[in-house]
Length: 458
Image 1 (tube, rainbow, N blue to C red):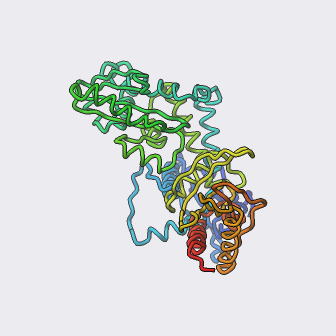
Image 2: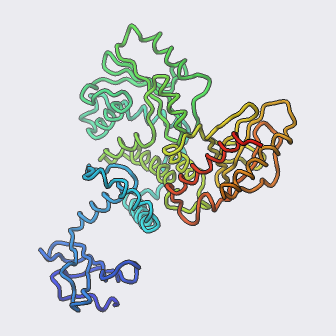
Image 3: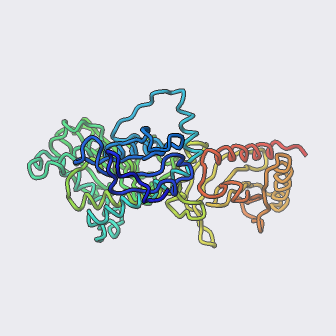
């Protein structure tokens, strides 16, 4: 069929259409997608899938017709299901027993979904650039320091004071919602707010009402150092323990951070707020203040880049894609940590896990971006070359027995941490988009190789 074959005699009157049989190998009897005048009212619009009944030789009554907003709601439902997030529709699981089937089916067919979602995102982003004038410079593309983020957070929090409810209700409610996120207080409890910066090197401090005090340690790309969080907590307790009944400590990080660091911060009594948490607050905002919109766009760009490992082949991944991938791995394997590792070649973003030791060495796995390496840590006084060769030989024997390909490094190191084997990139990541479930299964096998090497008997 071609465009000239689209039916014009039906109650649904096409205005814009797609010859779907040419776009989808699985289209079957679905011949056209159409947006046109609705069957139920020619002054309304609908989307329709026009099906051709081969047996009856006519346009099928099974052709679906849906109001346009329901098409978008279905898209929201699908994308929320794929990403594991909940949409504003507040969907619920109907059959728990089929949930694994749903996840498995989606993962098996991501090559169909990912490019479509990516194109939808690009179309929406292009539209936003036109409608929101985001082609103009974003202040946060230049104001990238933590001091700049201190300023925007302080400014937003100050709006939570009841004094400003009549000046800009949307901004006032945004400030209250943000302060509620940081402290756990109900928005209705927040009335008076005073904000300051750089008190005893504390990034932001906030006095709330007459009985609450909050400090914020704010990070963009850096992380904690020098036991600073415990120091700040002690300063607050010494200064305010007899002045304020409620003391709150928040750590805000808009870049990506390993879960191990987040847990360490929480153990020090701080409420950890990440980029997704901030976006959940900023996305509620319906006002048009350009600072808020720019800040939201800035954070969303980081979020989109972090998640784009799902829609790009591994050889296209850059800084944020690798961070997003490592954050995903933390959900499935016992990751010790990940971070930037400097070396003379320019460094890499590394992730390490599965440490197994004996009386001589520790052996573990390490991602060096596209390279998955078997590593040993040796702190003894013996000949490093002998130790390295011993465990390389073990690794080759164990991997051959398990029919797993592991290659010799181009050159061996001679330090405390030494690479003794590398898994070919295509064996780890496959071809095209990465299937995370399949990759995790492979990593479990690679973990067993480490255990077998450690317990290997000559």
